[in-house]
Image (cartoon, rainbow over all chains, first blue to last red; front, side, top):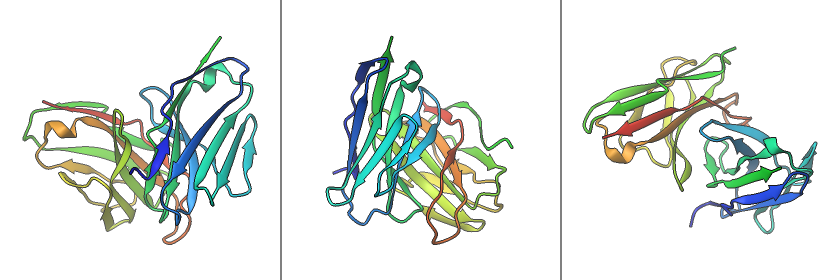
Length: 109
Length: 116
């Protein structure tokens, strides 16, 4: 079983929609959690860290449920520019990132 | 700052050839790592380094060597290329004190390698 599981999608949503991505991880000792964004044929870039208390950055909200080993990302008021692959990332030791396979989002006009 | 740079951007090798993928960062980051990304597999860690002179294996180290003689550079060597090593390779770096929480990792633009 892969350590980090994501629904690969694709998620096709109209502009202005709200979309949510989910991610589960298998190792309960995992320490740090992130969402990265990757545009087609580009390098991954950090979107946001995920904290137990939940955190928000503009239209993006991330939640962590340690008991269920579950991470979520909510995007409100989707923009065309949000089209990308969203990678759920978990790290146990802090030195090795475990990536999910990514969830593909396409926002349409 | 140039950030994380990788060369070459594209490379085609024949089976059995060797080559070195270059990675450099100018942010004085202690932590550097190499990942490969294959369709349907996500990014997988090959090797990483927590500082000059220190390297360790990741999830998929076989067929690759690394060294870290300076803080800035972290080359990845393919000893005898195989078609299974066809992939996109990303180098990443981060500021992190040993034992402390890993901070944001910055990725290079990637090297697209094809082994025939």
